Length: 142
Image 1 (cartoon, rainbow, N blue to C red):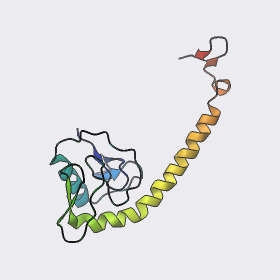
Image 2 (cartoon, helix red, strand yellow):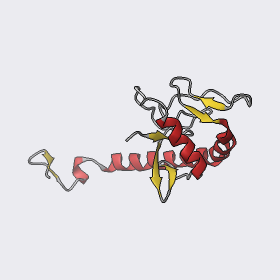
Image 3 (cartoon, helix red, strand yellow):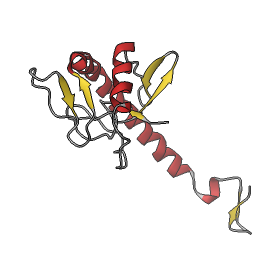
Protein backbone atom coordinates (compact mmCIF):
# COMPACT_ATOMS: atom_id res chain seq x y z
CA UNK A 1 0.00 0.00 0.00
CA UNK A 2 1.15 3.54 -0.72
CA UNK A 3 2.40 5.59 2.20
CA UNK A 4 0.87 8.98 3.00
CA UNK A 5 3.04 11.60 4.67
CA UNK A 6 2.07 14.45 6.95
CA UNK A 7 2.28 17.73 5.01
CA UNK A 8 3.52 19.49 8.16
CA UNK A 9 6.29 17.22 9.43
CA UNK A 10 6.79 14.47 6.77
CA UNK A 11 6.00 11.69 9.26
CA UNK A 12 3.84 8.83 8.00
CA UNK A 13 0.07 9.24 8.23
CA UNK A 14 -1.92 6.29 9.57
CA UNK A 15 -5.60 5.44 9.66
CA UNK A 16 -6.46 5.26 13.38
CA UNK A 17 -9.71 5.56 15.28
CA UNK A 18 -11.65 6.20 12.05
CA UNK A 19 -9.54 9.16 10.92
CA UNK A 20 -6.17 9.93 9.38
CA UNK A 21 -3.54 10.92 11.97
CA UNK A 22 0.07 12.03 11.88
CA UNK A 23 2.04 9.24 13.56
CA UNK A 24 4.58 11.64 15.11
CA UNK A 25 2.10 13.78 17.04
CA UNK A 26 -1.21 11.86 16.76
CA UNK A 27 -2.65 14.98 15.09
CA UNK A 28 -6.03 14.10 13.58
CA UNK A 29 -6.93 15.44 10.16
CA UNK A 30 -10.54 16.25 9.28
CA UNK A 31 -12.32 13.72 7.08
CA UNK A 32 -12.22 16.17 4.16
CA UNK A 33 -8.49 16.92 4.56
CA UNK A 34 -7.58 13.25 5.08
CA UNK A 35 -9.54 12.30 1.99
CA UNK A 36 -7.92 15.12 -0.04
CA UNK A 37 -4.43 13.97 1.01
CA UNK A 38 -5.25 10.36 0.14
CA UNK A 39 -6.72 11.32 -3.25
CA UNK A 40 -3.76 13.60 -4.05
CA UNK A 41 -1.27 10.82 -3.33
CA UNK A 42 -3.15 8.09 -5.18
CA UNK A 43 -3.67 10.33 -8.24
CA UNK A 44 0.07 10.35 -8.99
CA UNK A 45 2.68 7.64 -9.52
CA UNK A 46 4.58 6.45 -6.47
CA UNK A 47 7.53 8.61 -5.49
CA UNK A 48 10.86 7.29 -6.70
CA UNK A 49 12.93 9.06 -4.09
CA UNK A 50 13.40 8.10 -0.48
CA UNK A 51 11.18 10.18 1.84
CA UNK A 52 12.90 12.80 3.95
CA UNK A 53 13.39 12.32 7.67
CA UNK A 54 10.51 13.82 9.67
CA UNK A 55 11.01 17.49 10.42
CA UNK A 56 8.88 20.61 10.50
CA UNK A 57 8.22 22.07 7.06
CA UNK A 58 9.07 25.66 6.14
CA UNK A 59 5.64 25.78 4.44
CA UNK A 60 4.31 22.26 3.68
CA UNK A 61 5.75 18.92 2.56
CA UNK A 62 4.28 16.92 -0.30
CA UNK A 63 2.19 14.05 1.15
CA UNK A 64 3.50 11.77 -1.61
CA UNK A 65 7.25 12.38 -1.97
CA UNK A 66 7.96 14.76 1.00
CA UNK A 67 9.46 17.46 -1.25
CA UNK A 68 8.58 21.08 -0.56
CA UNK A 69 5.17 22.28 -1.70
CA UNK A 70 5.27 25.55 -3.61
CA UNK A 71 3.88 28.46 -1.59
CA UNK A 72 0.18 29.19 -1.92
CA UNK A 73 -0.37 32.72 -3.24
CA UNK A 74 -4.15 32.84 -2.98
CA UNK A 75 -4.67 32.80 -6.75
CA UNK A 76 -4.05 29.18 -7.72
CA UNK A 77 -6.71 26.62 -6.87
CA UNK A 78 -4.12 24.03 -5.89
CA UNK A 79 -0.98 23.73 -3.78
CA UNK A 80 1.62 22.00 -5.97
CA UNK A 81 4.60 19.84 -5.12
CA UNK A 82 7.86 21.24 -6.47
CA UNK A 83 9.07 17.77 -7.59
CA UNK A 84 6.20 15.40 -8.38
CA UNK A 85 2.79 16.11 -9.94
CA UNK A 86 0.99 15.82 -6.57
CA UNK A 87 -1.36 18.71 -5.80
CA UNK A 88 -3.60 19.48 -2.83
CA UNK A 89 -6.81 21.49 -3.18
CA UNK A 90 -6.20 25.04 -1.95
CA UNK A 91 -9.40 24.98 0.07
CA UNK A 92 -7.44 23.02 2.72
CA UNK A 93 -4.70 25.67 2.97
CA UNK A 94 -6.17 27.42 6.01
CA UNK A 95 -6.91 24.17 7.83
CA UNK A 96 -3.32 23.03 7.30
CA UNK A 97 -1.96 26.37 8.54
CA UNK A 98 -4.21 26.13 11.61
CA UNK A 99 -2.99 22.60 12.36
CA UNK A 100 0.62 23.71 11.79
CA UNK A 101 0.30 26.35 14.55
CA UNK A 102 0.15 23.69 17.27
CA UNK A 103 1.56 20.69 15.39
CA UNK A 104 5.06 22.24 15.19
CA UNK A 105 5.49 22.84 18.95
CA UNK A 106 4.24 19.30 19.69
CA UNK A 107 6.70 17.91 17.17
CA UNK A 108 9.61 19.86 18.70
CA UNK A 109 8.59 18.76 22.22
CA UNK A 110 8.41 15.11 21.08
CA UNK A 111 11.82 15.40 19.38
CA UNK A 112 13.37 16.77 22.58
CA UNK A 113 11.79 13.96 24.63
CA UNK A 114 12.89 11.32 22.11
CA UNK A 115 16.39 12.77 22.09
CA UNK A 116 16.60 12.65 25.88
CA UNK A 117 15.23 9.10 25.95
CA UNK A 118 17.72 7.97 23.29
CA UNK A 119 20.56 9.62 25.18
CA UNK A 120 19.45 7.88 28.38
CA UNK A 121 19.28 4.51 26.62
CA UNK A 122 22.71 5.05 25.06
CA UNK A 123 24.24 5.92 28.44
CA UNK A 124 22.69 2.86 30.09
CA UNK A 125 23.47 0.41 27.30
CA UNK A 126 26.99 -0.55 28.15
CA UNK A 127 27.87 -4.25 28.30
CA UNK A 128 28.18 -4.00 32.09
CA UNK A 129 24.54 -2.95 32.46
CA UNK A 130 23.09 -5.50 30.07
CA UNK A 131 22.16 -8.69 31.91
CA UNK A 132 22.34 -10.69 28.66
CA UNK A 133 25.99 -9.77 28.12
CA UNK A 134 28.47 -12.32 29.27
CA UNK A 135 32.07 -11.16 29.88
CA UNK A 136 33.35 -14.67 29.32
CA UNK A 137 31.70 -14.94 25.90
CA UNK A 138 31.94 -11.24 24.99
CA UNK A 139 28.56 -11.29 23.32
CA UNK A 140 24.86 -11.12 24.00
CA UNK A 141 22.86 -14.21 24.74
CA UNK A 142 19.52 -14.65 23.03
